[in-house]
Length: 220
Image (cartoon, rainbow, N blue to C red):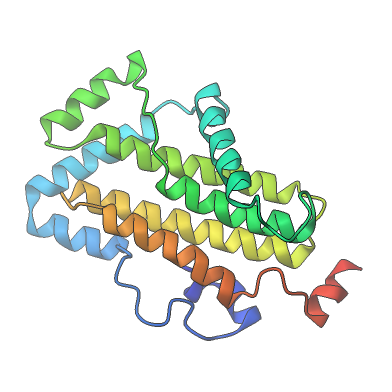
């Protein structure tokens, strides 16, 4: 779900959120076409998908919490000169933007659990980087944790949460597309940078932090 095609965008305007055609997304059809052209690609795509589905769920683990806390810590450091009071609605909106970009670009220490060793070996056999693949999955899980934090933020109004949730979902879709590209042997560095830029563009286009008459009515 890229934001420009979402129902949320239809509520707040019809302009192209990214100022043109998105060249970063990899659709299911694109992946399917590529796999059809190359049976070898199809086999490792299926294997990678099976590995992802069978991977342990570490969403609430200390490992994820450590990286989530780090993303928040860096966000606060970057906002030390903010004109808004820490904990205020305006500050929190800025903080979530910084946390999103941190999650997308900050180094992730990948930990391979004993039960994942066979998965890592299979990736290596297929010529794939398991560490990088898992790193992208971790980033997506951290964004899910951020979405939960947004939903629980009592300082935000309803439209703030809707806009932030839309941006998080869009970023996760971009990460999913990057993962698909990684399985095709692509260097995804530029895709991650595009995801970071898209977060800033989304904030500008969705006018986060500005309160409209509709926003005021949504409070009641």
